[in-house]
Image (cartoon, rainbow, N blue to C red; front, side, top):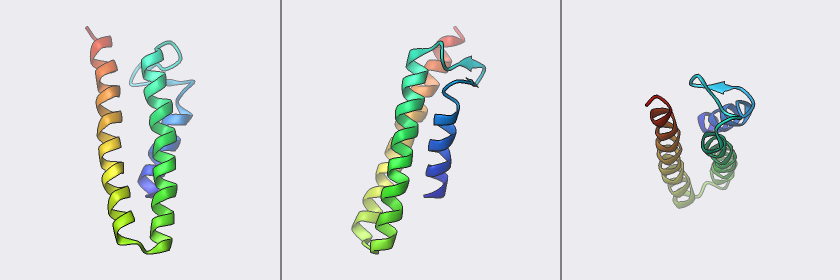
Length: 87
């Protein structure tokens, strides 16, 4: 949960900076992926903390699977932007 919270913070804090030598401000696709990914990671981290407090095994499993799937989607979308910028 802490890793997801940190990733969300990192993505949101780099909206006005360079990420992977690409200006996030000048690329709307990268900015959208970083913004949506950051918000979703923070939401999932909070949901994960709530599920740990509730001690609900099914909810914990669903949140962890959702985090994994969301992480893959965000990673692939950012990599897609980076790879197309290098061509």
